[in-house]
Image (tube, rainbow, N blue to C red; front, side):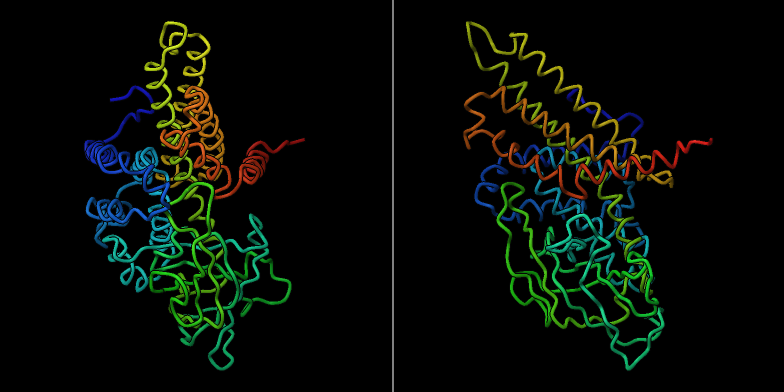
Length: 413
């Protein structure tokens, strides 16, 4: 067992789950990841294997067929999976965020209908906030839902029945093609007077669809995969709604106007998972760097014996350790029921920045070979930048951290 990134105080069950996942990563993911990534091929066999392991239901309560595990257990599994291939952790993470939002905010009927099938991996989730023109400015969403039930405008949509008609274009859906359930955030002004703050007039809709591309249900089109620099294998897409009709009982939680808070709760948990991905990719980069440094000889000795390389390895290992500790702290805080936006923001910011630096140092250690597609580090070098922007850019994290610090350390003068 490696010395770095150990987590103390885990139960026997947690250790057994992690050991099983790590074993799966070493045997089933690492040997094939680079080849699949270069072909931009969806890792169906890997996904099927993770379904059998129960990973898709890891945090779904036992009463709905899941394992009922903590966010910490889940984040540590994500760390292991990202160590193998970050794209696979993306396939699971979006599914998990939707399951988490359903568990926390769904109606009883919504939980009973979706969660057992999500735990089995039969229903796979994606979520959609962003739009082509807004990036991190979620409050500027223009996609819209309009109630169509003959004039009712009361916000308790589920009681009134009827339907909503959704129109607009969404962007950057991870799992947009392969998913069968998308949690979509749109503006819904009904029941909210003129001048209501933008974030108080948003609603999350649970949109079921067929997997694939093109028109996947009447009024809903997934145009195709966006071609990306890295983070391949997993499909990233747009989503176009044109007269998409959704029944009122598919408003998450049954009441409009709460979508922004529901999504932010999901993203807070998602940030812990992006931090975990950064930890996993950084660990793999360190493993590759320290291994190569002992095999490659220059000037009559392994490059690991040159002080310049030892300094790099020392810095890399310290960053791996620090990022892991912050990620674990953020997960444990959420598990204890406390607010963790400060810790999650810090963990996500630090882990993604350190990941990029550790990957680059491993790339430098590989010299010219790091530039070759035959070496795994080339893939990691293209994957790491996604973590700098996913689930909120570094700048957004710093904004969240700064605001929270000013709340905590308000000057009393």
